[in-house]
Image 1 (cartoon, one colour):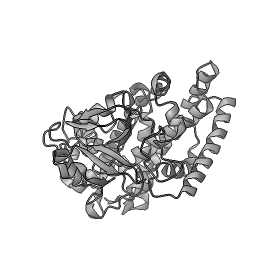
Image 2 (image 1 turned 135 degrees about the vertical axis):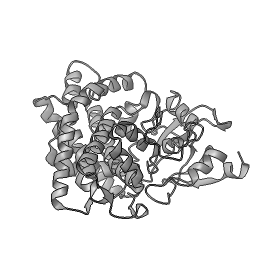
Image 3 (image 1 turned 90 degrees about the vertical axis):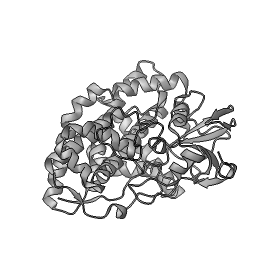
Length: 404
């Protein structure tokens, strides 16, 4: 590791050449400075890891905590209220036995079996949205017509929330994922509105429980489990933000990636059985994944031969790790038939994404339906002209204009 680069402090997140290409810093850091010093949007300093083995180690090691409200942890954003990573409620359920119990409850709602039973509904929703898009005619924005409404509808169903509220839900989740896009006043107002809405929703569910995740948690709380209002709120907020925002962005990015080199789309038309492995490769190859996952360590450790002192915030770039040549053959190529594909898009260890079965089902279903319904689908703009979503903790594309 060259001394000059290891001492240098880089501004993070990095800027990529386009919405479908990775920042050039990823490869440079993996090769020359796998444990890099970075400055976050808040101005605080942290350490960034970009190699597959390091990212996997940090995410799987229980000594690293997700609790960024601890003294000495870096603030991600300059907002006084912090980011989605820094809330008190997140801290309350991020450790030990409480977290395990919470994950068990949540996991019941995201089992492969339960998600498989929703697959037909997801497919019907995709067909309905595509019908509406086709009726309007090309060019169409795949994000607003399909990628945005579908995951909101799915999450609304899981939380027992009426679909009419989806626009407000999306606005709130955007504000809570802010790095620079919203002012402090807007973040505070969105948080307050969201909490007020959810408190009302939770009260309705107490009075009339249904077959949904919140009703299940309320029943468990009534049976003496330690689940207070704050944890109910945190769960609803977490499921919405994680389950809607990331999947809706990923649908847009998936289609953009597959159409940016149309040979990929043609390959899937010729071999539709590759949809499952293609979705995994899209997740691995995502060049616009957003911020990554922050962790905080209170003791000295070593990563890639570099000493990381206690009380350091470590940012894991799963997207950079997913292109590590030591972990994946032809790492910088999109190989739609790649198997096995142990990518880190959903994290690793005890905190890996609880909703990954749902995300995979949504992505596979949308891709299958699009291939069947719109085989001539193509981008209506050059890939480098796709407008990125700026200033949020998750990466995305603002609009994916398509024709068919």
